[in-house]
Length: 356
Image 1: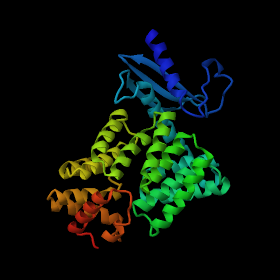
Image 2: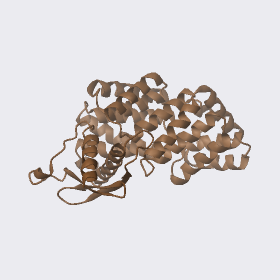
Image 3: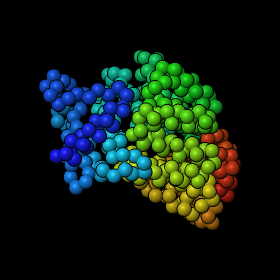
């Protein structure tokens, strides 16, 4: 019983770090009858907490998490649990938003629907996210999260070459990001999204500062932890990046876009010249999310540098199925990666057979 009370206090403190979250005591449940109100149910069992996130009115379980009470990679169990619970709530919120036609959705539903699409970093999904965010910003030009998501999505499109106008998209992304920061300088999700967009434009010092601020405000953010690793990749510091991505995977092993951490790890290994290990990490990530095509430029180059031409050409074929007009010249317009690593990627792509 004492352990359960301790766990409840730890969880309440972790939840209290989330800006904008209102905690309601159980005796007030009868007063707040909105289905937007969520309830956490849980128990302590064999040195771990088992928690369920439930909609108060409908009783719908949004997600269940299990966390042992040990610290892992420097983060306490309650912060890890909050990150998992938030991911479950966000996924359900997006699912509900998708069920409402865009023309009938309110602004929050549009943004909820756009968020996972933008974070997917897939061309069609990013385009859909931008359409939804454009509608949200027509209705409310000062919606900080919509602006930050739009800035992120445009930066992704520019860096991954989803657009024929990468320089123009970077300019539009920068404008969105500056507006978002001016409107919500203390909102962790805005800080993380803007940091991601800035990192892909190689504004690395500022991006790292924003991620640090975001994590100080709210430590239970898988995307922010992952972004620290990508910033090191973009600096060309493979050693620090190789340390960052396994930490993210240890903290949040179940979901939370873990394959993106594996992609980041594979890129870090490529930077270090560990081409066979890089190809294995990237292959594992792509096996988990086979529809994700843009990362194939890295296993193509890694396999080529490792001396496995057949594997490189298989990966290149997957890349070109989704990007039939891609050339080495177009790939050179991606600016995020450190110039030395980028040069080796371009060389590997060219030797594998990507047209100049």
